[in-house]
Image (tube, rainbow, N blue to C red; front, side, top):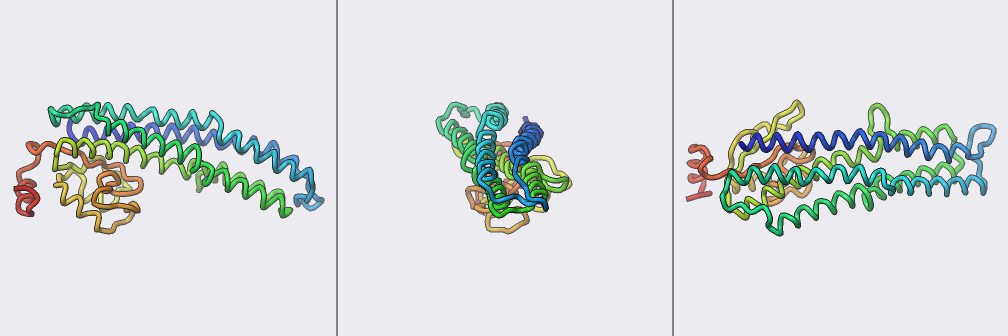
Length: 291
């Protein structure tokens, strides 16, 4: 398996699972809005369509908050996220098959690999099901409810605001999808790259192929590097540069996980020294990277 083949297979796998996740989340958002609507449509209004200040309306507000919590932190979204997490062993399998051809000393059962996997799963679950979900979705919805009900807002405007936030518009995704899709895709690519980099360090490999396909929205940063081979030290030097889409926190070490930044689908695939083009070896020697 070549560097481009492994990069392409991992990209297809991650893109496929995130697209399936997106479709399920769209259905989830519709359900969340419809269930909230069943509660808030019972709000008492004055003759001009404004929400009344009343004890019964405050009770409806509390009921709406309760049903939103039950749905957001229930089994439906948790099962959808679990379906995405299940792709991680498949990514591992692809990486294992590649490294077995690169170095005979590769060992797939090292403890640090299991640790990387566990940290990734914990991060995804925290961001998509607990702390992140609360901050990015639950709290803003509750704020919309409270502001409109407690201030006696116009009911039609309140519904539009609630619908646009939860379900989205033709131009903007609903909130669960808009905050989670990009994070999820980046998290899975970063997991694969971190796995690769951990193995690379363990085996003492020094050269990488900047692999993966180019698309219409590929950044100049990636276009200039795609398909080329680089020494580790040259890659580390990229972190000091600035480019559109560069991920915050990109350093000499994290660039191997972040690559071109937000939404980047490329990978720095380590290769054996015997597979490095002679011109690249000569350049690395001239730069003092190797002897």
